[in-house]
Image (cartoon, rainbow, N blue to C red; front, side, top):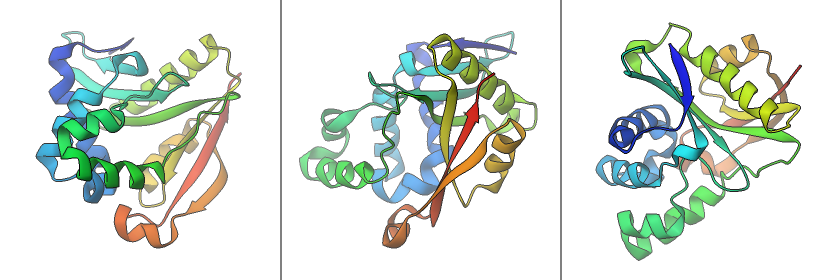
Length: 193
């Protein structure tokens, strides 16, 4: 398995589909229906904010996104949303998504999503992507990395804990849980040695 930054334009549909599979359950009511969401995500993907795990033959196994002051893995913005959803659809979607927005913290490198192809799960791809993100953070001068994990994803949380993350803050979603489909998220932090 090899991990490298970025991805080719031809990989956009596959990465968008994997992203939707991983995050669609919490974003579906806002970014759906699926065909529009895939169209939006495919265009909004930013290879400058991605690390990709691949087999020796180039088969994509998983992607780890990160967020900086210059963008994120999915950085479509209102303009990109208008192209996929129209003016009114983009406006209400952007407003709701802003409620989930995680600010970039200059002290900590922000992980903006990790997702692994179903056929590659259980092979250590997620762990390797986390370590690649830690290396990227070190190269950028960060002493810590952080991420958000929803309470409804205990398997991901267990992986993060095994990789040295500790819970720092718990964020109940309140009434917004009816829209996003999860009750709370936890900020987890890992110090880098």
